[in-house]
Image 1 (cartoon, one colour):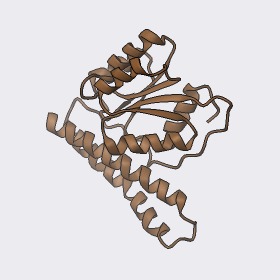
Image 2 (image 1 turned 45 degrees about the horizontal axis):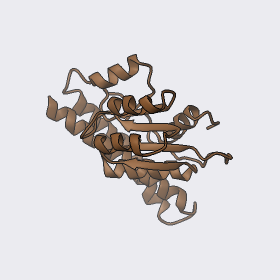
Image 3 (image 1 turned 120 degrees about the horizontal axis):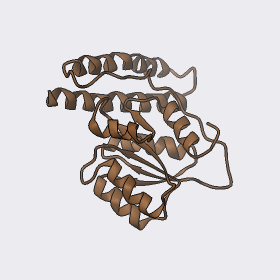
Length: 203
């Protein structure tokens, strides 16, 4: 069943990226723009994509299907005197770019790691961030290993974990440790609200 789990994981990312970028396009167009109808049709298909992932996951008795509603829009954060610094570690380029864009739209400074190894290196090279956002499963190192590395320098750093798997031992361990964790595909609005809450801001 490993192949079914991997296919579900990859389709999760597809649904997430399509939804996020379609929402960004929708926000950039005038309400009466001729392309709005096309964008709405794309967004209307997202539940079908996640339903497909649900069916694929059902082939694996270990993995339960857990989905949120279709991804919705984001809004800029309120301006503050301090610009929060975020370290984002994500190996899927499209997902990484989408989340970086969402964070930068809210006015955060974002440093990027594309692999677990890069994330570990940045923990040493950069000033400790206000928030670490990392995928659980990465080439080179897992998300929890990156968290442990960063907390050696900054024990109180806030952390947000992400997972493309609804069920995984690392996800179970994160929940047991009380670490915030979002399962993809998640709403960009929920993502931004979680980030704002962890940073002590009003969403």
